[in-house]
Length: 254
Image 1 (spheres, rainbow, N blue to C red):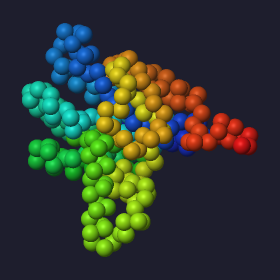
Image 2 (cartoon, rainbow, N blue to C red):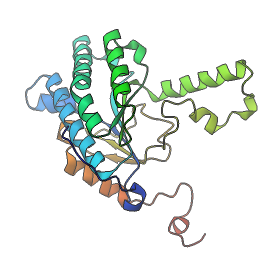
Image 3 (cartoon, rainbow, N blue to C red):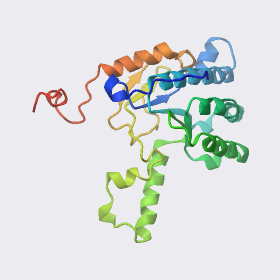
């Protein structure tokens, strides 16, 4: 990641999303098209991450959440999973100083206890090293699933009820949101999926209730700053009503 000063003007005035979520799909197919092993696609995907992070920093986008490894990805061949863990470790080792220089805070969301102890320790160190950064929040979902997120939030509510801290009738959407891995953050405004598939794949299920969806056939290693800008332009053209009429959102009454 290059050192980027960044223009942190408010996104509301520019029509930009505050929070962008991306499923980075197509690394393996990108490699196979080129006669390369699937892992070469994952390496190329790391370079694409760097470009999108730099663009978010430059535009002043507040949060970028990347789906790096789902709770279902453990079903992949053991060798590929092992190589992905190594790549995760390598990326943390290489990028943390650059993130800090660019005022980017790193957060990892998901059930990290399944990762090797050494990787868990490196994740903690990376988060601590960037904890004081006040620019872009780069949130990486690793061993994450939307259903897991909801289940662990519900479990927290159950413990509070059992301890007498919360009456069941006081449980509402806000109470559940407090237990999600993204607690305290705005929901994603824009969801991007590369690779030609058009589904959520268990990613931020609760959080994406009103998120604008954008799908592209580009494989993730080919998703550069220009492709990201196309997604942002699509977002700018949309009228987000949140249950209201078009006239209401345009300030023209009911």
